[in-house]
Image (tube, rainbow, N blue to C red; front, side):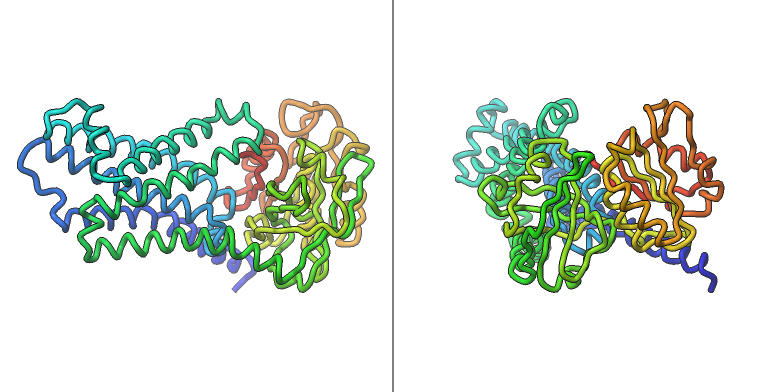
Length: 447
């Protein structure tokens, strides 16, 4: 088997696994609906029963999608390795919007149909549901919390908020889920009557919530105890960026790869409540890890004040912006600004032919440029520095293109890291030069 055939087979396998994992969400939803139908949920005696049944189906699918959201954002390795953090987060967001719409349909139809049965107004029926027990009050509170989370996730709202504030509000979704779950098991007949449906939902909740607890809470604490990660050195560079070197035990067992990032929580008085995603800026070493951050907000600007010896709680490694995604022997590594950090780390594992394209306003403002050039010379890679004022595309007013800078770019993988609009322009240019979609790899810096 040739090298190209081996890459093609590996790419196909990863594609099938990614698509299959995403499709499983809808398959599980279909099973949930099938169990509802098998229990007699669609047996009707009047048109009102049709709408009531439809409302219950909407609730079942919404519950599956919410559990899928929890699993997608649990940072479970089987999700991260298949989808990558970016795609998992994107599906999480998309599924969440559909789940919220279905929740509204569920509540609207069930309350309206019950109101029809009981001869009450919609509002009176909603209040009357409280008589069924505390769990119905909790469910309505949960819907209110979901509404707040969805409203603050809209681009028009989110773009006006700092990440830290938005993230705190977004955590309300977990309280919302806790508030909603009891009514499913205590009131919904599909759940409370036992049998296959009861076990189906119990397994789903156990897997989703278990993954979240295991990989969002337990695993970071285990890593903290196992590796004893601490700040070893803090260096401020002439371009304004700051590198933080962290030392620890047996860090090769962490399984991090060049190109990946972790969520870092520095356990001092000012920063212990904040976790931030920053990429490794050099390949992991058995005794140390390094990140390099450009000041773009309060948290990144304050890193230069870190004290050596500060303990570090890390979640990860995350992302598939690594050489395991490669589809061809050669590569083009394209970076802008602080997006150079994973690119610089990837360069340590790069195989020839490799070209690094750095988009900078000036060398003085370019993070790690000296390291990249020295490492490229050592690895036999070419470095192209595109410096100057912004043009209409991804480059300068000279109108640079990847096809002109790297004539054989169509036969290589292209790794792109930088601000989202800029990276979009690079990807369009790469596709125009003949690079297949599967050979363009992105690391996004949006939220």
